Amino acid sequence: MAQIHPTALVDPAAQLADDVVVGAYTLIGPEVTIGAGTRVGPHCVIEGRTRIGRDNQIFQFSSLGAAPQDKKYAGEPTELHIGDRNTIREFCTFNRGTAQDAGVTRVGDDNWIMAYVHIAHDVQLANRTILANNATLAGHVHVGDWAIVGGLTGVHQFVRIGAHAMIGFATALSQDAPPFMMVDGNPAAARGFNVEGLRRRGFSRERIAQVKQIHKLLYREGLTLEQAKAGIEALRGGTDADGDADLALMLQFLDQAKRGIVR
Image (cartoon, rainbow, N blue to C red):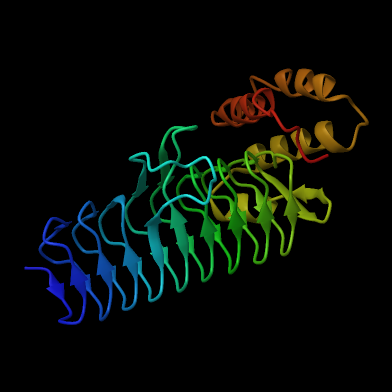
């Protein structure tokens, strides 16, 4: 049986794996599913159609699965999905999706989410990201694998943050941040590329050199975006087998940039 503190209120219809731990005064609603090994701290509220995977650590005073903060929301049966092995620190708020989008807010696997983080409706957070204290993701934001969002950063609705990007402390991000880049400021500006992060993730010197060339084409040559994309395309066929995948990731991101990119 799940280890439920006697002061917690868990609806009988909720589905909790046998080894889930639920702390004091926590409230869990009838449509919630929680996977094996997950620990929920005291004074949390988990409601709505919320599905939580395995081995997550949810600290005290978090609110997961509440209705979206969207005036168009009319009670549609939208959802929040949280993957496996996430750390969710104190006072986080994750909202369900809306019918105007996919209807699901998604948090992937192995994310490190610090205190007071807000994940709004329809956010798509990938895997192995870091969201520092008070990072705020507005509705429909997409965040790629390994991205880092600094503390006190606000991300405008519909903005996308590419894989391996790093957003600095207290940034106001209203345009897309391309993969691999380091962005900060208000207004946000690209300051370089995330070379240290790429080294830590095992990128070869050849791959890092190619990312450096991508950064140069986008930000140092005075090219239009279309000219920069053509230059990036011309880099295909390098010596590192993973280099072409990096180029494809960047080109796809640039092609889908509806709000424009930070330049």
